Image (cartoon, rainbow, N blue to C red; front, side, top):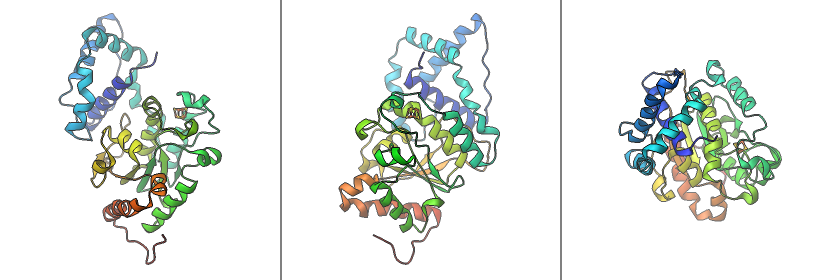
Length: 304
Ligand code: SF4
């Protein structure tokens, strides 16, 4: 049985909260006597006034409020599903014991396998587009979904939008190989449509694990879908851009005490910039903000 997507997010938030307190191991009690306490736990999740959220109080309110209207019967049923699916095992992924990020990414890729977890596996994808770049990258770019070229080549951002992203990276004084590039979802949606929320929620846990393995200093969300999914904020790009957000991948743990999460900035998707080149100046402002954070200087001559 599929777990309610909103509950999954609420649980992931709670697990992250415990992780931030230094609690990583969760145990499932067995036996009918535990049912009331499981139900109570689920009720707590929906109360959750103390649950921290990377996107701020306003965003948390948007996330939690609809759930507070759920009735007691449904909450108890959800609690039983939590027990059945053993959701707390999300805190023990196989790559956690691996220090080398390249090996950790390999494990995550193997775990993803020939994924059939969402409908996109049977809607014409040629291959899964996992991600590309340095496993030790300080800077990570996250877009929305693979397009036709990416589906064909198995690598994110290789078409015209990819060329523009390469130019943006060069303008920052870096090479494509210096950064890591991925998308929220790993299979091409038919007709390049916007990914459905369900698809994002099913696929993004693998992205979260990639982020936790790479431990970047800075993440740049490319476009509204990536920004809204990563930050759980439903806001227009004009509001999302120009700010730093504290970002810690949801539902995963990092054993590296020196990595407390990444700073996240939002800019336009390169495909949007191809359609509206006037916005390149705005995107450059966003990238300059990132460069200041990373101590980067642009090369003497920046290619257009
Ligand atoms: S989009 Fe992600 S979850 Fe869906 S089938 Fe592809 S890899 Fe699996």
